[in-house]
Amino acid sequence: MKSTNFQNTNTALIIVDVQKAFLDKDYPGIKRNNLDAEKVCGLILNKWRDSNLPVIHIRHSSIDPSSKLHESKPGFLFNDYVLPQTNETILTKHVNSGFIGTNLETLLKDQNIKRLVIVGMTTNHCISSTARMSGNLGYDTYVISDATAAYNTIGLDGKMIDCEVIYNTSLANLNEEFATILSSEELFSSL
Amino acid sequence: MKSTNFQNTNTALIIVDVQKAFLDKDYPGIKRNNLDAEKVCGLILNKWRDSNLPVIHIRHSSIDPSSKLHESKPGFLFNDYVLPQTNETILTKHVNSGFIGTNLETLLKDQNIKRLVIVGMTTNHCISSTARMSGNLGYDTYVISDATAAYNTIGLDGKMIDCEVIYNTSLANLNEEFATILSSEELFSSL
Image 1 (cartoon, rainbow over the protein chains, first blue to last red):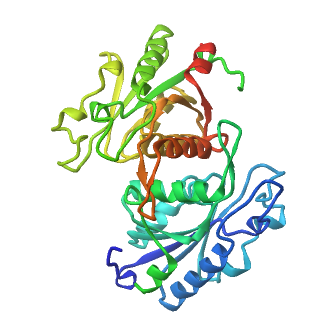
Image 2: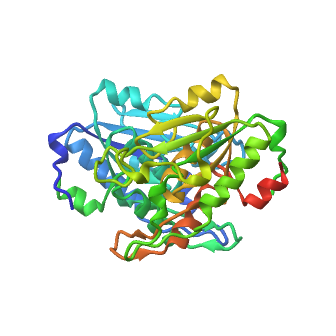
Image 3: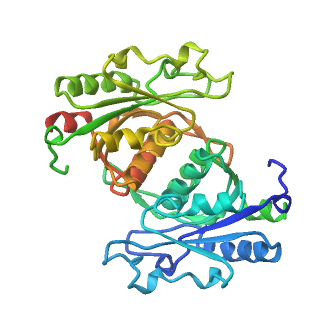
């Protein structure tokens, strides 16, 4: 891995969509991988707090009233592993990318933050969209592999693609092009 | 497929990175799928011209002097199938998303364009990044499956992931979440 000391820079932890809706791990035919992803997000969050580094919580607010991520539903609530503290920033988004429809870019500029560590849900949708924009906007971007998870996804031919394939290809697409992918173990060894 | 009449709306064709660098189809160990993708892009471009609908060419200019897509290299040139005409807009980008570092959004607003048909290279990098932002910014977004292609990509475990897997998972991730995926045949039947 690339040698990086996260504590020597003002690196923000960006926690994306770690909400209770994703605790419904198995619908019939729908499977997710990395069942411990939220727990790992919590461990990383604790490290960030111990290091007095900036933390930004991003949550998804679906505009579809039937979605588990609609503000009226219990699934909208933050997962217990990543409950925000009063001094931490919370941003609310309505689309996949944390940079669209929020003031994330302004916040990062105001705090002179140029490096982001991104964790959360789901690898192929909101994590990929946020990490792609982060890299393209010029932030030194890291995604923590075991702090994100994916679901089985229906292919164009109507056949289900396994969550591990969705997850592995999503991280392969991000790696080196948009972000550096690290495990939480590699991240912790840099803190 | 969703019934759509592209001619009744001011639908722009966005051609991304259809440049000569991608004619190097096979490096040792590197393989791409859909070898006819550029030809299909050309057929779609001709249909757009015949229908007097707006066309925007986006090309990639790498900041890495050793890249085949650096402006000094022959690979930077547009593929012969999609050579721009003098009345067509050309945008030059330095990152994956056609919306970052260009005036694409302003151009679309000025022309009151709310629907985009996106084609070009590569499915998992610039097409996915551009289509994800397009959907998240609120454009009614279409990606044409046989007018895009992907390369084998190295996974985090060091093993090569086949280009067909990269291509299929990329389109599955986009479909219904960010864009509607159509074949060129389905597109032509709507024109």
